[in-house]
Amino acid sequence: IIVAPSIGGDSYTFNVVDDFGCMYDTIISIATIEPKITIFNDIDANCIQNGELGVEGVNLYVEPGNIITNTNLDGQAYFGSLAAGSYTVTIDTTNLNWSFTCGGVQPFEITNDGSGCFELDLGLLSDNPCSSPNVSIYAPFLRWCFPNQKVYVQACNEITATGILSEAYVDIELDQYLTPTGSSLPYTSLGNNTYRFNLGDLNPAQCVDFTINTMVSCYASLGETLCMDAT
Image (cartoon, rainbow, N blue to C red):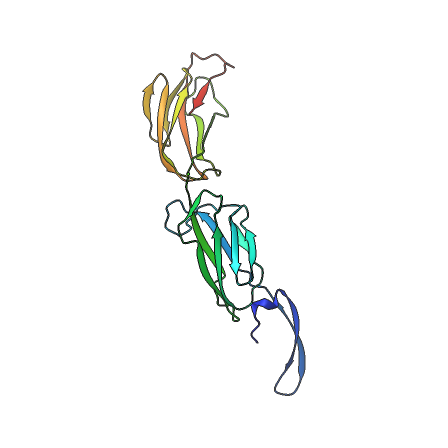
């Protein structure tokens, strides 16, 4: 038995007769095949979604049927069950600062046997790409006059970014009583207790975490607040 996707998701009862004339009632659950289209921020402009984030709020039009919808927070849009046939989806970037990397109109097929293309990934590239850098630094516990006291740093290009944070780096300024003895990333001393960590390029929603091993000076006072800054 072949059931078209347009029947929809439900349970159906079928009468089955065997070779001996015996009849059986069989209940079969059928799931609707619902086309999904994902619009993503195609950072490398190769029309392939390789971990790149979706773009929210993009209007999409499917014909025939005059179906209109828009993408959700993950850049995804669903059109419900469609009858078998040939369709096109059009991306509407009116009043949006995005350009196509895969073309603005894409065809897809829905077939009765469920073998059609039900997922499309279409790329956009920001006309005004902006990075959104953010960095945090903390040391949960520092022991006076002890080595290997860890400082934790996280540097991100936030999820709200539309472009790459190119050749990113973090400058760390440590208290005079903190001396770095090693780190999980290489660094360069800039003088005045300041150290630079090069991170490379960061895509939107990409973060780099690293640690700095420090020696807490024995000249520091017990209970003294030691300052550190990351920019």
